[in-house]
Image (tube, rainbow, N blue to C red; front, side, top):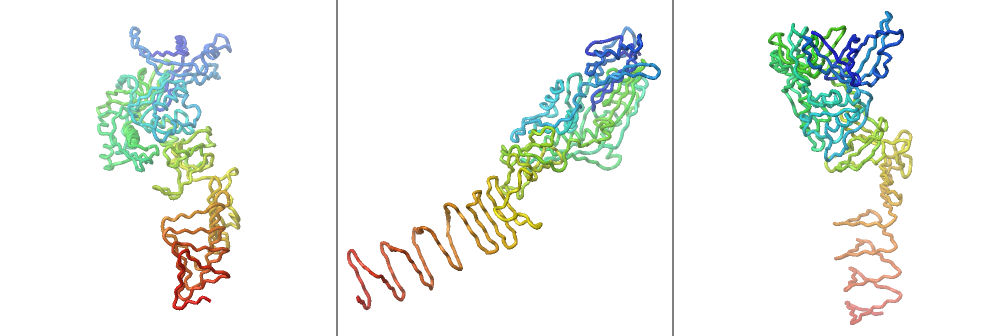
Length: 622
């Protein structure tokens, strides 16, 4: 079998190039961008002048590269080249050895590597809590456009999943998309200029048939117990409906799960048979806010576990141009138990000194790269634990739930608005609680649900050098280590003071003018009400005013009215009515004394318009 490679740089094929090629390696993976390495032998005719090394126009950073291969049995039978990778040069490395040998090593990646450059903090979606308008298609499309790629999104597994707000926090685009893909049971890869976001089991290309001792030179399949489980449950919280959401999965069929007689029973069933015990896993994620999301996450996690039940590694001697990561392999001649369908998660094409082979791995949805092994499956580089300071940017909650939006001055983009953050306030409940919503530009303290920066909560407000604590109307708030005054103050200056100063204990309620107040004096057991203007007391029922001592009413003018009757009593004591002038009028007026009635004056006049009648057992007129 005769292997042949085609290498195009900036779209231009160079047949002579392959004749000087010492090594070509193409690594493809379903978890990482594809990578290539090309080593070219220099054969200088003039010392110090090199054909490839000095060709800065062709072998430059960013030059496009397309590598294809084919294997021919007979010169008359020339199959089409199969494209292994389309990428660009990211490294140019001349190698000058002590033996005088000179080579040019070129490295590069597919265009997916662009998504791994740099970290970003930004928001997707407008944060409108009433109607979610964001989906994964929009997210992928935006990222693709920013990286010069064309989005290809399969929404078949995402129908109905809509979001209000998604935060990409300190992540590369690759990390961010892969985190979403893993959560939803999807995969991310770049083919040419297309950015794919599709179900993890979706196959690439056509299946490849491999037979041991024919083209398959090495094959090591494994059935392993670790990782296999019986069921996955996903749960979360719907704050709008004030109830929990949950779903579960215990069965999944996907091309990422090997289809071989040895795995006729899935890993979960075989584990139960072998160890007489069921094993479960739970997904607890703050993004699980709907039953649909819970179902997607439970299915994705179960498939991830189930796909690790059967693993394999192998090598194809002589090459297999159609075998790339994401390809289904039909393996035969390895016994009944292990013959069947496998999903290649990695495929490494190696051409070295005329010899061509392909090494592959089968690991389901579980990457075994050094990076993933070091970080672990559930690494949390994009989590924010603890509390963080923030500045309020809006407090006009469209749903009138008392929420606010904030920005984080310590983030790279300090203008980025958060999602609507709920407030943790004393006594909050149905139509009750302390309704103290922060003002715009207030500094607040924010915590994040399970570390998710997309789900902030305001747990408190902060003072600083510019926004200082309120001052009491009088006295010293803190002295000798004791808090004498506890103060509630509004934006305009309305104040409630609880004063614990020894010997001066009191409660003060005072408006912003300082001229209207209520003071309860705990030392004197007295209350003072001071009003600069009018004071109106409107009572719908009975009003009683009692005093065990004196009752004093002092005003410029007193006007007392009763609709049905009025009674003024002084008990066993004396009632005095004094004035410069007094008038007692009525349709009928009775003046009575139980013992004696005296009417005296320097001059007294008794008149009747019609008649005056004076009666008594004895009447004396001087």
